[in-house]
Image 1 (cartoon, rainbow, N blue to C red):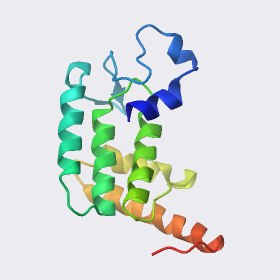
Image 2 (image 1 turned 180 degrees about the horizontal axis):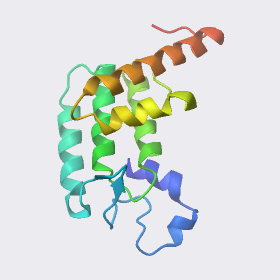
Image 3 (image 1 turned 30 degrees about the vertical axis):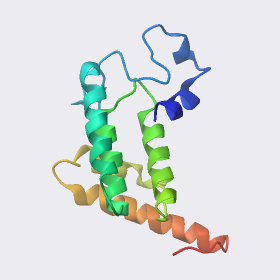
Length: 149
């Protein structure tokens, strides 16, 4: 994840800022949508716990990948670029486990953000939005005549 962050953020204006850790966890606290995220001093511990729990799964489902994505976004380990890194990780994990990925269309971003915001209270909103995004991906595969499960 740190490598993905580096790829996305190196050679940007952020990389010239002394307090911006390109390719590493954040040094300053940040807030997303009015919600506090993990404190910089807690990020490593939270990420380690998240990845340990995820990697213990014998069989990974799309719901597991959505949960990984949501919890990653709650931790918000980087100063900026968390959404891009989180979505790339979700895509990678879908492909790794032979699961059709999900794409969130611009017209449905508000549902996606609501689902993330409410994840710990109501998981269904984000799951439904991502499953809808999976249907969108299937339509694209069908259009391009690419086989899928």
